Amino acid sequence: MRDIPDLLDCLKRAPSILSRFVESIPEEKLELRRGDGFWTIAEHVSHLAAVQPMLLQRIGRFLKEVHPEFIPYLPGQGEEEPDTPARLEMTTALERFRTYRMRQLELLKGLDEKTWRRTGTHPEYEAYSLYILTRHILMHDHWHMYRMEELWLTRDAYLTRL
Image 1 (tube, rainbow, N blue to C red):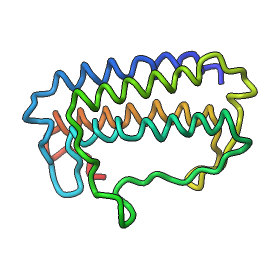
Image 2 (cartoon, rainbow, N blue to C red):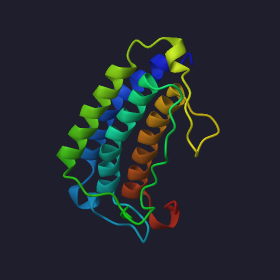
Image 3 (tube, rainbow, N blue to C red):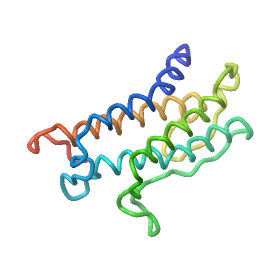
């Protein structure tokens, strides 16, 4: 857990990195669907924005509850869940991402080691804690950003099929 300052710093920087990255992508590439089952770049950005309130809620539950139990969020699964994220206007999506990230960081700022070690139960993971959730948020951001770059720049023959 010695990397908590680094994690928080990276989480703080993610909205700027994402915004500048999206601004660099030609607009016609934002809506390009590279194949069946592929999200567009705009859908990845919209997803990142859409999940931030849920992640904020999870952080809050770790701070308020003793060993909270979580349910998985699985996009595209279940009868009421669409196959692709609802498409938000890019400026709106990026602002929502930034706003909720700052709220998350406000909750995480200045916590003691005992609080970082608080555990919960999540059926997808063998272990789950506030620390793991925080690291997971960062990895989730960067996974989607990598996928967006891949969808933008990778030639068809080399595109990862999920």
